[in-house]
Length: 356
Ligand SMILES: *Cc1c(COP(=O)(O)O)cnc(C)c1O
Image (cartoon, rainbow, N blue to C red; front, side, top):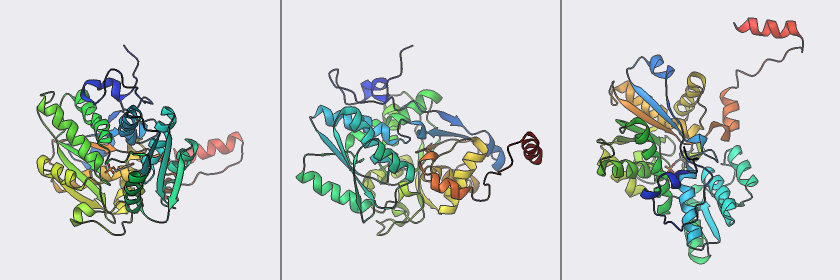
């Protein structure tokens, strides 16, 4: 048994590193694939649903998979600084891996539209935070421009090494199940992740590690659904801030995924997304952030209409940890605030018997 030291070491032969490459890792990847037990019973459908809980990565989102590769390659190329635009999780991951590597991280974030936990993390990791009066799309455009003028490496998912790192999540799923699922559902913002999973599944299928490839289902928030509209959205709005993106950078790649896999895009309201987030917490003990629950909201919808037929095996990616967005969680639980009682045995006994 060798100690687990991150996804680059585990999948070294399938990633662009050499024996001399200095690997920048925090032990990311190897996240649990949890089979849902209560929700399938609740909906009364014969389906097998797994959630790939990416919220258990070192900085709490799947962005760590891409960042270990992107920062490893930036350092290998001699870069002293990285930069990204972010809705929060990319900035947290970039900041953490930059610290690990001993280089600087600059992050552009939309002022007031970042979940509290993500901001706190990024501050703690000591990144140079630049808040802008504008959304992610504006920040992304600025990052591309400034990277032409300053010695900084972009670590958004337009950096191809991000995709290489993120494709390993598909490898892990196949390695664990022994096959690819029938359907793979995930939230779509910039569409880097759906592109990465598909690349991973395709590589394994081509090399006959598995005999099948999944249908890829990309789900968006109703107020930020360019793939459903068929064009960029000027002012994207959703409480699921991680996918509050109107002009996805991997536009063409994601359409190719949809066509090649026979999949589809769809959109769901913030209410549907929050309901799925609550459901996962209260029935399965899995607390993901709002954007992440879009994958389950979509899967449940498509199961109910039969678009995803009974008998299917489905994997939903839960992209980030629920602890990242405590404000939304507290709002979700506004009617179930804790009871306060006197600190004596009788009162505690009564409080327990009240519930049982
Ligand atoms: C980044 C992110 C997404 C969107 O992923 P894309 O690759 O941009 O489509 C979804 N959920 C969470 C929690 C994220 O951090």
